[in-house]
Length: 321
View 1 (cartoon, rainbow, N blue to C red):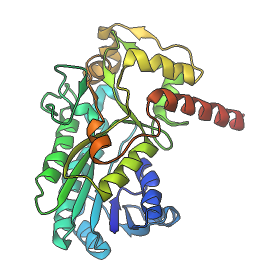
View 2: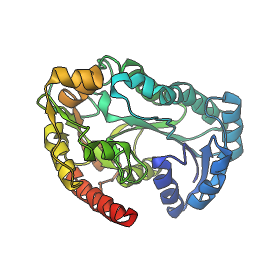
View 3: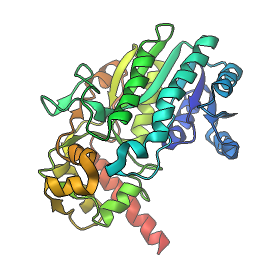
Protein backbone atom coordinates (compact mmCIF):
# COMPACT_ATOMS: atom_id res chain seq x y z
CA UNK A 1 0.00 0.00 0.00
CA UNK A 2 0.96 3.63 -0.38
CA UNK A 3 0.98 5.31 3.02
CA UNK A 4 1.37 8.95 4.08
CA UNK A 5 2.73 9.41 7.59
CA UNK A 6 2.08 12.92 8.89
CA UNK A 7 4.59 13.68 11.62
CA UNK A 8 7.11 11.25 10.20
CA UNK A 9 10.20 12.62 11.96
CA UNK A 10 8.87 12.57 15.54
CA UNK A 11 9.59 9.86 18.09
CA UNK A 12 6.84 7.66 16.67
CA UNK A 13 7.61 8.42 13.03
CA UNK A 14 11.24 7.40 13.42
CA UNK A 15 10.07 3.98 14.62
CA UNK A 16 7.06 3.64 12.35
CA UNK A 17 8.38 4.60 8.92
CA UNK A 18 11.14 1.93 8.75
CA UNK A 19 8.69 -0.73 9.95
CA UNK A 20 6.19 0.16 7.25
CA UNK A 21 8.94 0.10 4.64
CA UNK A 22 10.15 -3.32 5.83
CA UNK A 23 6.56 -4.54 5.58
CA UNK A 24 6.64 -3.71 1.88
CA UNK A 25 4.70 -0.44 1.85
CA UNK A 26 5.56 2.70 -0.10
CA UNK A 27 5.85 5.38 2.56
CA UNK A 28 5.61 9.13 2.08
CA UNK A 29 6.76 11.02 5.17
CA UNK A 30 5.36 14.47 5.85
CA UNK A 31 7.28 17.10 7.80
CA UNK A 32 6.95 20.88 7.87
CA UNK A 33 10.74 21.32 7.79
CA UNK A 34 12.85 21.33 4.63
CA UNK A 35 15.82 20.35 6.80
CA UNK A 36 14.17 16.99 7.56
CA UNK A 37 14.24 15.77 3.96
CA UNK A 38 17.47 13.82 4.41
CA UNK A 39 16.25 12.21 7.64
CA UNK A 40 13.07 11.13 5.87
CA UNK A 41 15.11 9.53 3.10
CA UNK A 42 17.29 7.76 5.68
CA UNK A 43 14.15 6.37 7.30
CA UNK A 44 13.05 5.04 3.91
CA UNK A 45 10.30 7.54 3.09
CA UNK A 46 9.63 9.77 0.14
CA UNK A 47 9.95 13.28 1.66
CA UNK A 48 6.87 15.50 1.69
CA UNK A 49 7.22 19.02 3.10
CA UNK A 50 4.03 20.73 4.26
CA UNK A 51 2.79 22.77 7.20
CA UNK A 52 -0.08 20.78 8.69
CA UNK A 53 -1.78 24.04 9.76
CA UNK A 54 -1.94 25.28 6.16
CA UNK A 55 -4.90 23.57 4.43
CA UNK A 56 -3.60 24.31 0.93
CA UNK A 57 -0.18 22.82 1.64
CA UNK A 58 -1.78 19.75 3.18
CA UNK A 59 -4.13 19.32 0.23
CA UNK A 60 -1.22 19.49 -2.23
CA UNK A 61 0.90 17.11 -0.17
CA UNK A 62 -1.82 14.50 0.11
CA UNK A 63 -2.81 14.85 -3.55
CA UNK A 64 0.82 14.39 -4.62
CA UNK A 65 1.33 11.32 -2.43
CA UNK A 66 -2.11 9.92 -3.36
CA UNK A 67 -2.03 7.44 -0.46
CA UNK A 68 -4.27 4.52 0.33
CA UNK A 69 -3.73 5.14 4.04
CA UNK A 70 -3.00 8.28 6.09
CA UNK A 71 -1.36 7.93 9.52
CA UNK A 72 -1.77 11.02 11.71
CA UNK A 73 1.13 11.34 14.19
CA UNK A 74 1.36 15.13 14.35
CA UNK A 75 2.58 16.60 17.63
CA UNK A 76 4.54 19.66 18.74
CA UNK A 77 5.23 18.98 22.40
CA UNK A 78 7.52 21.46 24.13
CA UNK A 79 9.09 21.29 27.59
CA UNK A 80 6.65 19.72 30.03
CA UNK A 81 5.00 22.09 32.50
CA UNK A 82 2.39 20.30 34.59
CA UNK A 83 1.30 23.54 36.24
CA UNK A 84 0.40 24.95 32.80
CA UNK A 85 -0.46 21.76 30.95
CA UNK A 86 -2.68 23.25 28.26
CA UNK A 87 -0.09 25.92 27.50
CA UNK A 88 2.62 23.27 27.09
CA UNK A 89 0.39 21.36 24.67
CA UNK A 90 -0.96 24.37 22.77
CA UNK A 91 0.93 23.54 19.57
CA UNK A 92 -0.08 19.90 19.66
CA UNK A 93 -3.68 20.87 20.39
CA UNK A 94 -3.79 22.93 17.18
CA UNK A 95 -2.41 19.98 15.24
CA UNK A 96 -5.06 17.74 16.80
CA UNK A 97 -7.86 20.11 15.84
CA UNK A 98 -6.95 22.16 12.76
CA UNK A 99 -4.35 19.67 11.54
CA UNK A 100 -6.75 16.75 11.84
CA UNK A 101 -9.43 18.60 9.90
CA UNK A 102 -6.99 19.51 7.12
CA UNK A 103 -5.73 15.93 6.82
CA UNK A 104 -9.22 14.48 6.76
CA UNK A 105 -10.40 16.94 4.12
CA UNK A 106 -7.40 16.22 1.91
CA UNK A 107 -7.71 12.48 2.47
CA UNK A 108 -11.35 12.50 1.47
CA UNK A 109 -10.55 14.38 -1.72
CA UNK A 110 -8.19 11.63 -2.92
CA UNK A 111 -10.24 8.67 -1.70
CA UNK A 112 -8.09 7.47 1.22
CA UNK A 113 -9.49 4.12 2.37
CA UNK A 114 -8.00 4.03 5.89
CA UNK A 115 -7.11 6.76 8.36
CA UNK A 116 -5.15 5.94 11.54
CA UNK A 117 -4.76 8.60 14.22
CA UNK A 118 -2.86 9.04 17.47
CA UNK A 119 -4.71 9.51 20.76
CA UNK A 120 -3.72 9.12 24.43
CA UNK A 121 -5.00 6.88 27.21
CA UNK A 122 -5.06 9.57 29.94
CA UNK A 123 -8.45 10.96 28.94
CA UNK A 124 -10.52 8.26 30.65
CA UNK A 125 -12.98 9.63 33.18
CA UNK A 126 -11.69 9.19 36.71
CA UNK A 127 -14.62 7.18 38.04
CA UNK A 128 -15.13 3.49 38.76
CA UNK A 129 -12.37 0.92 38.61
CA UNK A 130 -8.66 1.53 38.02
CA UNK A 131 -8.39 0.01 34.52
CA UNK A 132 -10.55 1.11 31.59
CA UNK A 133 -11.58 -0.40 28.29
CA UNK A 134 -12.46 1.42 25.09
CA UNK A 135 -16.14 1.22 26.05
CA UNK A 136 -15.70 3.33 29.19
CA UNK A 137 -16.46 7.09 29.28
CA UNK A 138 -13.61 9.14 27.86
CA UNK A 139 -12.83 12.83 27.91
CA UNK A 140 -15.96 14.17 29.60
CA UNK A 141 -14.35 15.11 32.94
CA UNK A 142 -10.84 16.51 32.27
CA UNK A 143 -8.78 17.84 35.18
CA UNK A 144 -8.60 21.60 35.63
CA UNK A 145 -5.87 22.96 33.39
CA UNK A 146 -6.14 20.06 30.96
CA UNK A 147 -9.49 20.90 29.38
CA UNK A 148 -8.07 22.15 26.08
CA UNK A 149 -5.74 19.18 25.70
CA UNK A 150 -8.42 16.58 26.40
CA UNK A 151 -10.80 18.53 24.17
CA UNK A 152 -8.29 18.36 21.33
CA UNK A 153 -7.87 14.61 21.83
CA UNK A 154 -11.63 14.22 21.72
CA UNK A 155 -11.70 16.25 18.51
CA UNK A 156 -9.28 13.84 16.84
CA UNK A 157 -11.29 10.83 17.93
CA UNK A 158 -14.71 12.23 17.08
CA UNK A 159 -13.63 13.54 13.68
CA UNK A 160 -11.87 10.33 12.63
CA UNK A 161 -14.63 8.02 13.82
CA UNK A 162 -17.28 10.20 12.15
CA UNK A 163 -15.56 9.92 8.77
CA UNK A 164 -17.82 7.26 7.29
CA UNK A 165 -16.17 7.62 3.87
CA UNK A 166 -13.04 5.87 5.18
CA UNK A 167 -12.03 3.29 7.80
CA UNK A 168 -11.06 5.36 10.82
CA UNK A 169 -8.95 3.87 13.62
CA UNK A 170 -7.88 5.73 16.75
CA UNK A 171 -4.98 4.46 18.85
CA UNK A 172 -4.98 5.50 22.52
CA UNK A 173 -1.29 5.11 23.23
CA UNK A 174 0.06 4.66 26.73
CA UNK A 175 2.82 6.85 28.07
CA UNK A 176 5.75 6.51 25.69
CA UNK A 177 9.23 5.56 26.78
CA UNK A 178 12.27 4.70 24.71
CA UNK A 179 14.36 6.51 22.06
CA UNK A 180 13.53 10.17 21.34
CA UNK A 181 10.80 10.28 24.00
CA UNK A 182 10.81 12.30 27.22
CA UNK A 183 11.36 9.01 29.07
CA UNK A 184 14.31 7.96 26.97
CA UNK A 185 18.01 7.75 27.86
CA UNK A 186 18.42 11.53 27.65
CA UNK A 187 14.78 12.52 28.07
CA UNK A 188 13.30 15.25 30.20
CA UNK A 189 11.33 12.95 32.49
CA UNK A 190 14.28 10.59 32.88
CA UNK A 191 16.45 13.47 34.03
CA UNK A 192 13.78 14.66 36.46
CA UNK A 193 13.65 11.22 38.07
CA UNK A 194 17.43 11.03 38.25
CA UNK A 195 17.59 14.44 39.94
CA UNK A 196 14.78 13.52 42.36
CA UNK A 197 12.48 16.17 40.91
CA UNK A 198 9.62 13.75 40.18
CA UNK A 199 7.92 13.06 43.53
CA UNK A 200 5.20 10.63 44.51
CA UNK A 201 2.23 12.90 45.27
CA UNK A 202 -0.22 11.93 48.00
CA UNK A 203 -0.87 8.21 47.99
CA UNK A 204 0.49 7.88 44.44
CA UNK A 205 -2.72 6.07 43.55
CA UNK A 206 -3.00 7.33 39.99
CA UNK A 207 -2.85 4.38 37.57
CA UNK A 208 -0.66 4.83 34.50
CA UNK A 209 -0.37 2.70 31.40
CA UNK A 210 2.91 2.68 29.47
CA UNK A 211 4.06 1.40 26.11
CA UNK A 212 7.55 1.25 24.63
CA UNK A 213 7.72 3.46 21.54
CA UNK A 214 8.82 0.48 19.41
CA UNK A 215 5.86 -1.59 20.58
CA UNK A 216 3.53 1.32 19.82
CA UNK A 217 4.97 1.49 16.32
CA UNK A 218 4.35 -2.24 15.83
CA UNK A 219 0.73 -1.74 16.88
CA UNK A 220 0.42 1.12 14.41
CA UNK A 221 1.65 -1.08 11.56
CA UNK A 222 -0.98 -3.61 12.59
CA UNK A 223 -3.67 -0.90 12.54
CA UNK A 224 -2.59 0.15 9.05
CA UNK A 225 -2.94 -3.41 7.78
CA UNK A 226 -5.92 -4.82 9.67
CA UNK A 227 -8.53 -4.29 12.35
CA UNK A 228 -12.05 -2.90 12.22
CA UNK A 229 -12.65 0.84 12.49
CA UNK A 230 -12.83 2.05 16.07
CA UNK A 231 -10.74 2.82 19.14
CA UNK A 232 -7.87 0.70 20.48
CA UNK A 233 -5.84 1.06 23.67
CA UNK A 234 -2.18 0.55 22.75
CA UNK A 235 -0.62 -0.08 26.15
CA UNK A 236 1.40 -2.78 27.84
CA UNK A 237 0.01 -5.56 30.02
CA UNK A 238 0.50 -3.94 33.43
CA UNK A 239 -1.27 -0.73 34.41
CA UNK A 240 0.35 0.40 37.66
CA UNK A 241 0.03 3.06 40.31
CA UNK A 242 2.56 5.86 40.54
CA UNK A 243 3.49 4.56 43.99
CA UNK A 244 4.45 1.27 42.31
CA UNK A 245 6.22 2.25 39.11
CA UNK A 246 8.02 5.48 40.05
CA UNK A 247 10.26 4.01 42.80
CA UNK A 248 11.16 1.10 40.52
CA UNK A 249 11.99 3.50 37.68
CA UNK A 250 14.28 5.45 40.02
CA UNK A 251 15.94 2.20 41.10
CA UNK A 252 16.44 1.11 37.49
CA UNK A 253 18.08 4.46 36.71
CA UNK A 254 20.35 4.21 39.73
CA UNK A 255 18.69 7.28 41.21
CA UNK A 256 17.67 7.99 44.80
CA UNK A 257 14.16 6.97 45.80
CA UNK A 258 11.64 9.66 44.82
CA UNK A 259 10.44 12.09 47.44
CA UNK A 260 6.92 11.74 48.79
CA UNK A 261 4.90 14.90 49.25
CA UNK A 262 1.31 15.53 50.42
CA UNK A 263 -1.27 16.18 47.71
CA UNK A 264 -1.53 19.85 48.67
CA UNK A 265 2.22 20.31 48.21
CA UNK A 266 2.07 18.34 44.97
CA UNK A 267 -0.66 20.65 43.72
CA UNK A 268 1.52 23.67 44.48
CA UNK A 269 4.45 22.09 42.64
CA UNK A 270 2.67 20.53 39.66
CA UNK A 271 -0.73 22.20 39.56
CA UNK A 272 -4.11 20.53 39.68
CA UNK A 273 -3.36 18.54 36.53
CA UNK A 274 -0.18 17.06 37.99
CA UNK A 275 -1.87 16.22 41.28
CA UNK A 276 -4.75 14.49 39.50
CA UNK A 277 -2.44 12.49 37.25
CA UNK A 278 -0.48 11.35 40.30
CA UNK A 279 -3.48 10.41 42.43
CA UNK A 280 -6.58 9.83 40.28
CA UNK A 281 -5.56 8.77 36.75
CA UNK A 282 -7.06 5.53 35.36
CA UNK A 283 -5.10 3.00 33.36
CA UNK A 284 -6.17 1.07 30.26
CA UNK A 285 -6.59 -2.51 29.08
CA UNK A 286 -4.98 -3.69 25.83
CA UNK A 287 -7.28 -6.70 25.38
CA UNK A 288 -9.01 -5.33 22.27
CA UNK A 289 -5.75 -4.47 20.50
CA UNK A 290 -4.38 -7.92 21.29
CA UNK A 291 -7.54 -9.60 20.05
CA UNK A 292 -8.48 -7.53 17.00
CA UNK A 293 -5.13 -6.19 15.79
CA UNK A 294 -3.23 -9.38 16.55
CA UNK A 295 -0.65 -7.28 18.40
CA UNK A 296 1.25 -7.96 21.59
CA UNK A 297 3.96 -5.77 23.11
CA UNK A 298 7.50 -7.12 23.12
CA UNK A 299 7.93 -5.20 26.38
CA UNK A 300 5.00 -6.87 28.11
CA UNK A 301 5.47 -4.74 31.20
CA UNK A 302 7.15 -1.43 31.98
CA UNK A 303 9.22 -3.37 34.55
CA UNK A 304 11.25 -4.97 31.77
CA UNK A 305 11.29 -1.78 29.75
CA UNK A 306 12.51 0.37 32.64
CA UNK A 307 15.33 -2.08 33.38
CA UNK A 308 16.33 -1.82 29.73
CA UNK A 309 16.16 1.98 29.94
CA UNK A 310 18.33 1.96 33.05
CA UNK A 311 20.95 -0.17 31.30
CA UNK A 312 20.98 2.24 28.34
CA UNK A 313 21.38 5.24 30.64
CA UNK A 314 24.34 3.62 32.37
CA UNK A 315 25.99 2.74 29.06
CA UNK A 316 25.52 6.22 27.65
CA UNK A 317 26.62 7.83 30.88
CA UNK A 318 29.78 5.74 30.84
CA UNK A 319 30.43 6.65 27.21
CA UNK A 320 29.95 10.35 27.97
CA UNK A 321 32.39 10.11 30.88
